Length: 234
Length: 296
Image 1 (tube, each protein chain N blue to C red):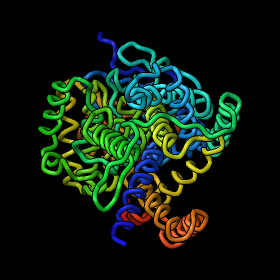
Image 2: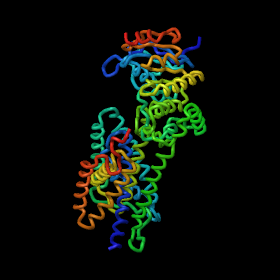
Image 3: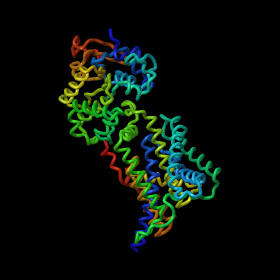
Image 4: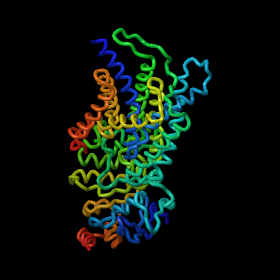
């Protein structure tokens, strides 16, 4: 059996003095979409932030492609192939779309052009507004830019934190289609969400988090929405 | 009358151009680390003494020693900038900005006393960049050093603007300044960007010092004055706005020269601080900044 792309073992993360992630174990395979569902404060964001290196675990370990990530600073994790799209997007508001994508791209100009073209294929709207500043974009376009920025690093694993926040259902549907396309190209996706219905539609596997722990981990097609909602709320 | 105004304008632009170079370095560090480098003015002063020291090692028959002294001063100053980041910023990274205020004030004091101990308290002059002499423009005359200040400032400010807006490195520098955490998350080595910013900023401060040390001489206690000018330029131009700081510095130079000619230098200084207070009260976003509410 192939080793998983991401393997999290007994991870504990403390955030602001409280335990945000409590002995959690989880894995993501290449091309697999794993939805981490949970109510506000369940520890989803801390989980994703600790994978990219923005929060330090107090126990446990995170392996990416067999490498122990504890030895890698955040920017080196990104260069290893982890893309991160945070809750609230956190775009570089005073920069244009074109500048943002350039900043996030690789140093080789030809490779950068290739990746930009690939990102533009996924999000054609970003081409039309390439000289617009990030803060001038609509919510949907901002979310597209946040994902596009993460994709400029050609990630093998994409961490998406609450991409549905503030988006119209149609726009969210488009984004989930993109998530599906990325998975079909072999990208592993860890999708943290509160909106269970949308996540279930695109996920291969679902992990429900409550108070920092995984209380349910099962294939998405074996689960019903109501059952997931019950687990989320406890 | 027109001749006098033209002369004042030229003098004001030359002084403002030098202030703009200093303000540019100052604002780059503010943007990169979110804290004020209170030693910036003293690095301008140190740049002046570096130019004096370097010129002492050059052959006496060198035709334009200033042309050699300026880049060498910038190079050594860039090294000092790296050292500054290692001593006064990185050990305090993640602590409140006031820690950096204090550490850079300590560096400023060390620079002031260090230059005093090495060079003594007497004013010293650096060599001119384009040589001595005057250029007659008809309605005004410009010294060759004023030409040098304007040309060097324009070239350096233009080059920095070009790098920041047109290169991947500049875009990564801007991204790191806007949101260091997210910049790290997309693969940018933020500590490296910060170190480079310190080197660039202090290199610009060094250039300012080398340019001004010919026209106005340089003394170990000059740093505070340059620091205040850079600070006021950034407040007037809009905190953290690069083009605003440059324009603010040009305005300060013009203002100082015109008011000093009409009244006195002391009156010019007093009115400048009055203008600073007025900006802080009436337009805290600066003359060239937009209202906070319009930003995302």
